[in-house]
Length: 367
Image (cartoon, rainbow, N blue to C red; front, side, top):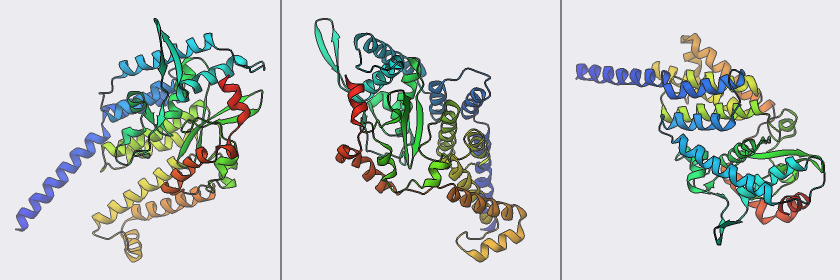
């Protein structure tokens, strides 16, 4: 019986080591990391589209049809250019060309538009919000731009990502911004300064809507955790986080090395990126739990935590590091928003739009 147990244990450890090596040496994840790192180091041209699709291709292990996706992006780009030629905004400031491009991308994302085709007029249908698996818990691909393009349904991750991709395709910048569990767009124009574009509802909410959630601490705004207009390199940091998160889904029992390398690179660029800081702390927590398992100690016991730190210097290091990291996340103003409350908050933008909508911008963008 003991011999059989030893053989079984040996086989399990052998299989685990194979999985670990496969994870560490995964070509597609390493290639995606290198692509984004090269952009951050200015070793290759910046392209948010390429960064996003490299992450999704890594998760699909090289099977993402990037040629088809680029064709769909090209179609939307051509559609945007045709709208620009046929429409004239009432906007009168000197940055009209830029604002017209913003309005065009907004229209493609959020409005039903007539398209003349031969002798008929067909209706272009916009993208819509998908309330199924909003956070990608069941299937992380629900957060992907490729899924959004395939189904025309997305969420607060894929929709602002596609907006930014399309904006850059027609030659204008778009700033991503973060709120609790949420990504949206910020623009700066001469007519009114900074304003928000919310793609899940298709309106332009004032900052009061964001702070109305009750989970945006003043320190989080001061420290750039939330409501900051991210530059292009900080947006690439979001792609690095996505890469680390996808890697964990592909290799759930990995040793944490690739994840830590990836989130540390993201934090080099965007030091107060809360989701990356949380993933880093949670990765150290998982490493500590694995150490305790090796010592046959349960993780839910304070005495066991003290014991393992006495027995293993690495455990002591991980425990202190983890506590320091969680403390720092709280100090910079991050507060976790319950997922159910987030969905209620998101819906409130439609039900209370009269209270939160920037009507002047809506008029400028729809005429």
